[in-house]
Length: 273
Image 1 (cartoon, rainbow, N blue to C red):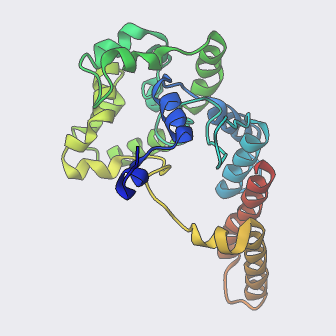
Image 2: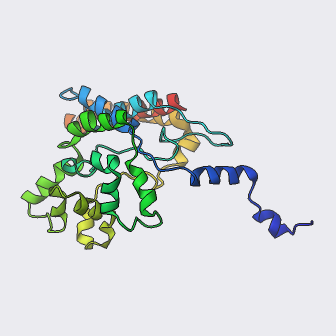
């Protein structure tokens, strides 16, 4: 059989077919690796004289040093943000644990709870596939309920911002749903917030993973070591500016926290890769 040029170009290579079949046959999994190491680093650095950028950088470093590295058959480009076959890390410091309802253990543990919240499924996921969220191990369940959730329940961005908005009169009636403990209302709000009034969307705190492509040109051109050298050089410039009285010590310390955290982050990525 002679294939036309269009037919040849439209052929899907066997390797790609295998990768696609593998992905489609997997169930979604909850990956607690990032949440675990971020929790432990944030606990250990409480009340230490370091800035918020450095705390985040140290947490990233600990995560990349400890999370399992997954390289699968047929992959030409390797590397994954998750230790699970198909599952996202939990960005625990954002807004996922407001009063222990944003990521309640019962949602992952109790299959019926999932079906009650979303009887018709979500988008292309039918209820039976959605219920696979509920399948985590006993060890993961204990980690989530005994270590991760108790620490972050009043420390996430979401937990800290809502009282401020309420005090300033900025908390709308719609957003007040985040303050109660009704699992159905909270989950429906989180997944269908796009249907809410646009004024409510300012309250959404979300990790930007996969949503925004930023600065790829720089690491491709400079490498992570080049970025680290640039951060070091900038810090030296700021030291001179501080000495010359061009900036205040407060301004210097804020920039110092960021630039030193850049060094830690870039080195961590280098170690991981």
